[in-house]
Each structure stands twice: as C-alpha cells, then as structure tokens.
Image (cartoon, rainbow, N blue to C red; front, side):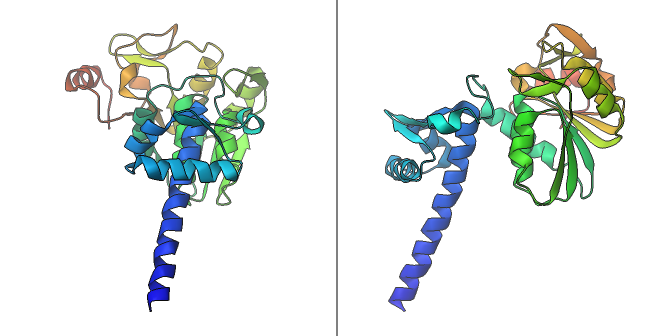
Amino acid sequence: MVVLYIMMFTGVLLVLYEERKAEILRRLELKSVVKLSELVAELGVSMDTIRRDVKSMEKEGLLCCIRGGACLPDKMERFSAFTGREVINIELKREAAAKAVRLVGENDIIFLNSGTTNTIFAQELAEHSLKCTVVTNNMAAAAVLMMQASMDVIVLGGSLDKEEKSTFGSVCERELASYYFDTVFLSVNAVSADRGYTDFRLKEIPIMQTAVNNTRRSVAVMDSSKFGNVAKKCIFGLERVDLLVTDNQASEEKRQELVRRGAELI
C-alpha cells in the first residue's frame, strides 16, 4: 500500500512538472528570456521548485540556464515566435486571448491576422480540442497550431514580412477574399473613441480590411494598454468591428468612452 501511494504521489508530481514545463516553454517562445523570479510569481511555486524545473529542462535540451533566469538554446531561438522582439503586456494579452477563444465554435472557420496577440490567441486555442479550420497570414500562429490534429490550418500565400512573421500583398488579399468566415480575430495596434482602430503596420491594414469584409462576425482582441492610443493609419471605425475583447484591467472610464461611441466590449 505504501508503495502504491508513493507511485501515485510521484505520478502527480510528474504531471505538475509537465504542466509547468509547458508553461515555461510557452513564455520562452514569446520572450526568449525569462527571469526565475517572474516564473515563481506567475506559476505560484517556490524558487527551489523553479530552479529544479529549469535544471531538468536544461538537461532535456529545452532551454539554457543563465544567471537569475533561462533562455532558449541557440538551436531553438531562431524558431521562436518573436525572436528579437520584446512582447509587452503578455499577461494582459493572454487574459484577452483566453476570453476570445471561448467565441470559437465546433466546425467554425476563423481567421487570425498577424501580431503577438493572435500568436498568444493561437497558444490558447491549442489548449482546446476543437474541430475547426484556422486561416491565417500569421506564420508564428500557424507554427503553434500545426501540431493540433483536430484543427485544419491554412496559411495564406503572398510576400513575406520577416519582422512580423506574416504574409501580405495582393496575392495574400486575393486568397483571403475567397473565404467567408464565421469569425475573424484581429490583433490591432490601437483603439480610441475619436479615431477608431488604427495600426502602424501599413502592409497589414488591407489584410484586416479584407477579412472584416468577409465574415459573419469580427472581433478585435486587444490588451487594455492600447485603449486611447492612435497609430499611423486608420483601419476602420468602432462600428465596423462587432466585438472588442480585452482584459479586466481596463479603466471603467476608458471602457465607457468606447461604449458611448458604439463599441461592444467583453
């Protein structure tokens, strides 16, 4: 009986380690370097536990331990979703993405455009076993979803934006226009009550406009730090997007300002 309890306890510990390992890798994919202190706070375990985890992961070749943190090994860093870019407000983006994933139904066909928020959305979507079709110009999101057996992933052709890790241009827009989606999920740079949705990625704006013209429902997925900001060029007004999904940290004042101008928020 004692042996049985030990085996069961060991099995529980192994599951918890595997869960933490998956979460650490998910964070490394977005940031390339993580601090041990951040992992302690975010995963709710002790520093000793995190140190053991990263040491074990280093032995497996999944990461490299550095002073006070961990990073991707050189052989894996070039495959990271956003190598060389700082992905800010990750937790707020993840909170918004987790809400948005609940809007995806069985057998839906959805579209994800480029951007870090939609790459995080793809990570959240990968946690579910939904049978659906994902069309995207977001290469990083496609890389996250490609191993999900229940999902069909269609990557749009076109010119390659190496910095954004996405496709764009007339070929991409024509291919995109041939689909009609249940929902398009938009990763957008800024939103304000006066100027609507704006973005600095000029190559991406026609992609978003084409997608919104070919869908039953359009959803902007944004962290609240983008509220009240204005980027380089207007994409469309607030009324053109059916739903704005964000985190729970947005101030009530900014929420109400957008609602008064016609936005629907969750």
